[in-house]
Length: 136
Image (cartoon, rainbow, N blue to C red; front, side, top):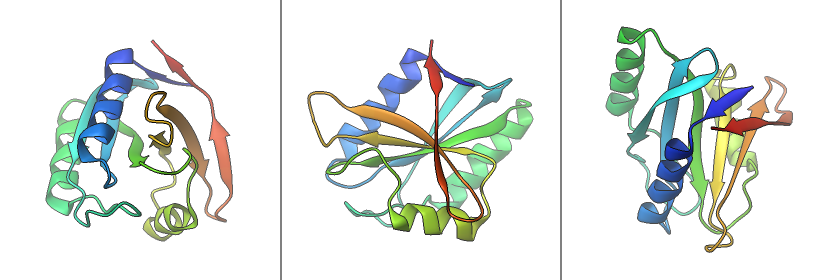
C-alpha cells in the first residue's frame, strides 16, 4: 500500500489551489511504497480539463529519482471542478502512454473547503481500480 506523508498530501492540495482553475500535475517518487519526494511538473497544456507533463521537467524528475534509487510511485493531477475520479481523457492518456505501473492520484477541489485525494490503478484495458493509500 502506498504511504504518503501528510506534508506531501498538503503540497498536492496547495499545488492544486495555486493552479486553479487549471489542472496541475506532478510525480511522487520513493522506495518501498513510501513517498520520499514530490516533483511539481509544469502543465504544458494549461487547461481546466486536461494536463500534459512538461517533457523536460518530467525527464529531470525521472533522472533525479534514479540518482536517489527511487522509483516513480504515482502521478498526480487535479480536477478543480469535478470529482477525484479519472476522466475518459485521463484513462486514454494513461493507456496510450503505457505508464500503467504507477498509481494515478487525483486531487479534487470540487468542494473547495474539503479537497479530496483518491488513488487509482488504470489497467491496459482502461479499467479503473481504486487503490487505498495511507497518510503518514
